[in-house]
Length: 592
DNA sequence: GCCGTTTTCGGCCCGACTGTTTTCAGTCG
Image 1 (tube, rainbow, N blue to C red):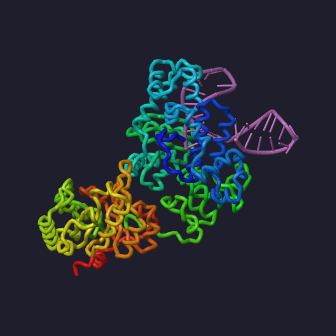
Image 2 (cartoon, helix red, strand yellow):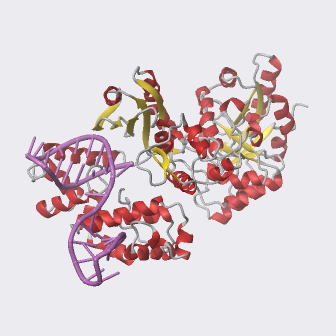
C-alpha cells in the first residue's frame, strides 16, 4: 500500500468509511508503526487484520451489527474497536495522532516503490534523513550505501524510486494500457513454450483507467518466458525477474507483472488476478458455502491442503460453483454473481453490433478530416451510417459553425447522400452548446431542420453549482429538437473531475422526454460513466455510444465506448446506434 | 496486536523476489 499523496489535507467532512478505506487505513497504520520502529509483531497484527478484513465475504455493516467482527481470524478487540469507530464516524484519533507523530517527509518516503517502513526508520534514525530531498542527497553521497544491510544497489533503487515517484505516480488511460499490453500478450502466445497467455487485472475488466498490467501465462518453461518478457522493446526497468513472477516498467511509466503457472493452475490464476477484489471476495464466499475453498491456486475441499480440483478453463471454474461464465467487464462485485446464478446475465453488446455513430466532427469545426474522408473511414469499418455533429457558434475555441455555415453543411450533406458516392449514409447533425441558462446555441427553426441534435456543455459547467448545472441540462433535454445528451459530466480522465451535476435527475429527465444519453467513447472521456447505467436502463433510457471523432482514425475509438457499455451491462437493444440504417432513420424521424 | 491456552503470557508468519548476505531481512501483492 502507498500512503495517500495529500498528507496534510484537513478533513472537512466527517464521512463514514467503507471497507476498502478502512483496510487502507489499517495498512497505513502498519507502515506508520514501522517508520516509528514499533514492535514487529504489532505491525504484523495490523497487516494481518487489514488482510483478514479485506478477505471477509460478509458485509461490514452486518458484522458490526451482529458484533461478529472479532470472529474474523486476525481481528481482535483493539482492531475491531478501531474498525467500528471508522465505520461509524470516519475518524480515528489513534490514526490521526500517529500521522502527526511521523514527519510528513517520512510519510512521503513511504510512497517510494521498494522502500518500506523498516528502511525508512533506519535511514531516518541513522542518517537523520527527514525529507525526499535529503533522501536523494543521502543516496547520491553514498551515505545510504554505506549503511549496514544496504548497498550500492539499494541506493540506486531508492533514487530510481524517487524519480518514478515524480514522474509516474498516477494511473493510465485504458487506451494507453491497451496499446502497451496488446503486443506483449500476442508475443507471449507465439512463444513455443507458452500454452496459454492472457491479460488479467483491471485491463481485462476494461476499467477506464489502469494502475498496472498483469499477464498470466501457462508454461512448463517459465525461465524462457521470463527472459523474453524482461527483454521486450520499451522495457525501461526490470524490477523483478524470478521463476514464477517478473515485473517491469515500460517507458511511459506503466508497470507490468507477469506470472507463469502450470496449465492446470491457469484458470484459477487468471480468475484470481482478473479480480476485482470485491468480485473475488464474493466468489470465495460462494465456494465456502459449497464446502470448497477458492484461491489463486484453484478450488479444493474446505480445509484441504493443496489437492486442487482440475478445471479446463474459467468456464469450468464458474460452472463448478453453479455459475455461468461471467464476462470480465462485469466482475466488479455488483450484481454479476446473483444474475449468473439464475442464468440471467445480459447478452452484452459487442463491437460488431454497431452500425454507425452520431457524434463526430469534420474540418468545418475543429476536426481534421473532410466529410468525404470521414465517410470513407466509416465505410472501412463496415458502418451503414455516420452522423456529423460539428460544434455550434458559441464554441469559438473549436471553430464553431455559424447558422449560415451550418445551413451550408446541411446542403453539402444532402448532396453527398444523393450523389451515391458512398455506401455510408450521412446524418446531418450538430453538437449544439447548452448555454449557461439552458438555452440552445441555435434557433429552434435551424435545429428543427437537422436530422438530429447532440446537446452538450462546453463552457461554464465548472463555475456553476450542482442545482444550476442540473437545471441547465434538464432544460436542454426538454427541447423538442434535442436527440441526445453528450458527455454528461464533462470529466477528463486523469485531468479534470466532472462538473457538479445531479445525474439521477438528469437521467429521469432524459427518460421523461425520450432522449438518449451518450457514452462518449473518447479515451479521456468515457462519459457517462458505466456505474450510472443501472438507473438509466431501468428507466428505459437508450444509450448512444459515440467516438466523438475529430479525425478519420478517431472513429475506431468507438471500441472503448463499447467496453464501457459492456461494463454497464448493456445489450445491443439498449443502444441506439446498433440499429440499422432504416431503423435509425425511423428513430430520428427523418428520410421518410 | 492476536491467539490460545499451559488463564496471564509466550509465540506469532504467506510466498516470491531482491539484495546483502553466506542464512536472512525487507518489500510487495
